[in-house]
Image 1 (cartoon, rainbow, N blue to C red):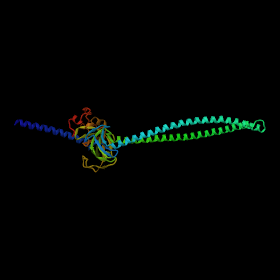
Image 2: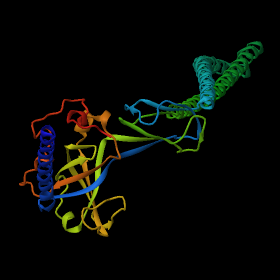
Image 3: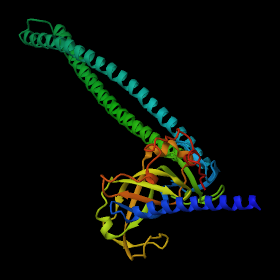
Length: 390
């Protein structure tokens, strides 16, 4: 009987201590709600979401991640079917080789024509030299012919001598005409070769342009093949698998939803008189229901400039007001990176913002660092503080 009384007394003492602790805690928390230096609001952790989508229409060949997986930037997430694109790339590369062969052929032809032009120019020089020599012979023969003609008329020379000089003169004249004809022929040949060279150069330019176009086409196809491998643009967690293997997507079809775990914030709502006092960058604290003994440092990154109706999902501490201002409390990305594997969105909590920098944070809103209880890096903050994340 005596032991029973002792147990009852002990239980009453423990209950009294617990009630006292609860009343003190409630009083302190109630006091901060009434403190004009602080404002608060309920909300849930949110993060920037990125939709991983197919650039081109096609069929999903592989899905390499599941919902909840943590992925690193550059990690392959989805492989779209690329057999058609690869066939097009092979065809484009073959077309490049054909164009390159045409270019080499045009260059070889140009070299032949340039050699022909050099030979024609040499022939022209030789023909002009021959014309000069034959013209000199012609002039001499002409002088002799005219002198013989004059002498024959005076019966000073024989008719045979005159006829010989006349024949030499006529032969020299024929040689000059032939030399001039040779020059005209060589010049015509040079013009023809020059036209061929111009044509060959145009063919080379065209072939080079065709090669450039073929390579651009191959590069485009290769880019499409590369874009068919969907990779993670950031470090984050896969939130949803929107599509599955075998599905055929249109251009821009979404496959995965990725959450950026380094851009996490809690959205809450405050009335007009409070919103006007909140400055961008103001110091804030976030207390999550799953980690109610840990105050997470944050800062105000957004305050709405226009009031809006409070969403039904947001609970206000006082009677719901119709028009409220939306505010975001963003967690430091450097802190998130230390515990990125434990960051989860959707967890409810309360965001506190300090309106007066001179007012110290109450104990339950001090960070572990401010309390001298630093959490080791890469450790679950909830476990380090004796609580379990839900």
